Length: 216
Image (cartoon, rainbow, N blue to C red; front, side):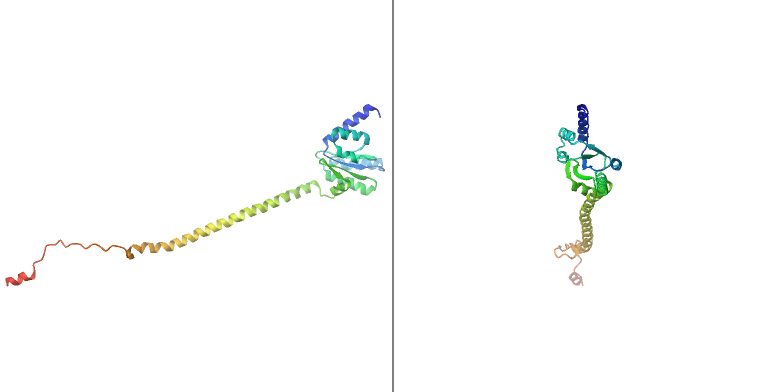
């Protein structure tokens, strides 16, 4: 291979690694060309491109792209499934795992998931997860359930408090009606009230009976 061709491949791999947050590395040794084509066809709908690479060129590209976690996986015949930004890493891992199980040839070495190194066993675990849409629904359920419980905890005491306030208002209303009646009759029965004043007799004096007897 000419030097210019190598440099072009390194530049393309470097750009691909810089754009890719998730990838899976496999040993494809023993797969036929038809099996490789079939595997590529399985991965394409899930947003992944399966590429056979040369380790020496890929090491240079990984170093240039700062993808050091990839270096340890570049041993032996290597193929990389580059997952696009809108791809489905779970579906890609499942397709690769199914092919490895069916052919008993393909070997999953590991990879990078959202910038984090994962092992071959991690890829197998990833392949057993539900599809991304199902995972999103489960995640929403996990988030919403505690919120619903929290709202219930917050609103229940409020409802109880409102009920207590209403009951207290009713109780105070009933006790107020009972105490008002005695308050109205209190002035008439009170022992501390002053006696009514005695009116003076201003009428003219009547002649005494003694005077009438004297004339007789």
